Image (tube, rainbow, N blue to C red; front, top):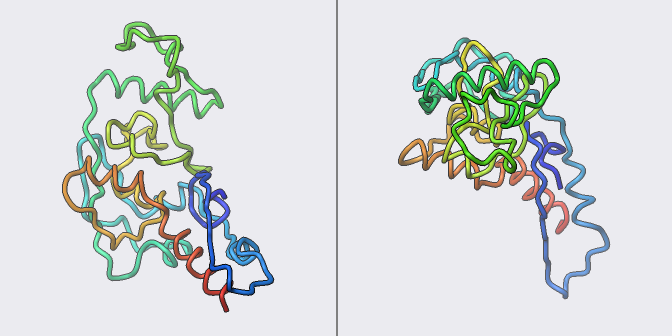
Length: 217
């Protein structure tokens, strides 16, 4: 299934296997129950709208304003939430220059591969494989799959706002994965990114649990 079909702002395809006891007489499909919970998630502009702008290596603990998004109110942020872990990792000047090039190309509808980057910015000797090392997100769409490698670097998740010129923050990654703002990730920023990348989106988890209840009713 694709989490995009269940209200998560992310294209994330995963195999879900559901088993039940042989002695249960069930004349319906679990996945028919699950697909009753389909829902369109917001684009990244709507998902990030109330989060303040920050630069690479910076953080913020205050929302821009009261959230206006119905989706964010439903799943992500309650009126009593305090903004935490909206912290962006620092980047060197070389990566920041590459980020600008990749995002500008994205806005023109072009995917900038590593061997398209000016030679003076190329720090890797391998220019024949792994050419999609840098990838920008799009405000008008949803994210590609958040994976645990985001804990190593943020090159695959460049923020869609050129003025901020950075990779996404811990809180932004958490929102893409469907975590509520009240969820706090323990330990370091690196550990938080790894937890987020390895998680099953909570919005999907809730819908799977609801479908199981319907299935066994």
